[in-house]
Image 1 (cartoon, helix red, strand yellow):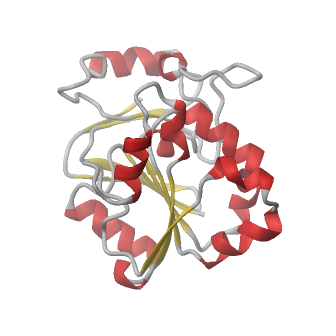
Image 2 (cartoon, helix red, strand yellow; image 1 turned 90 degrees about the vertical axis):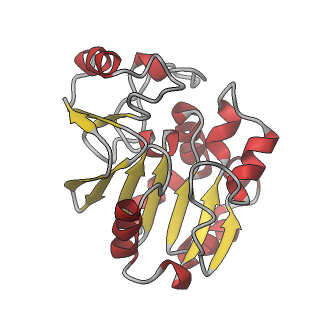
Length: 220
């Protein structure tokens, strides 16, 4: 699966161009499924927040980009309906759009639903993550980002890439997200890491990492 790991969605023309390149077609010709699940695990999440994400009324552009079609894939519902019901929905989509929220909660439901184990079987599809929707692909999120605690504890996520991700670098509304905070966070991790601001994304294709940015970022 091709990955476009953003801090705050498709915020600028450079990230949009990267998305189109990954899709191999215009956005207007691509079928999308959006995944709001992560928002429910975060203390700041709400039904209104999920609605804003799904309807393209948030400040983090994902669902409102002009897709050919858009559907909602709620991971918490999938275990109760069976893989044979929802797998065709994923197979027919060109791209999965994962909302922000709590990365460990999202990881838990990706595993519980069976979606996580199927991702490697979709090499032609694109995953666009937003904050926690990006962090879930990393091996660990770091203690600073642990909110919702999975049954087994820990900060481990899916590990589809070999680096961790610190989103919203130097965001004015997040005084705890400074470059110094990111450096301290990265020092506690055993693997490489990136800190990215809201104008930056990390693109990963076949293991090759490329930074797409109109802002600033750091590698640790």
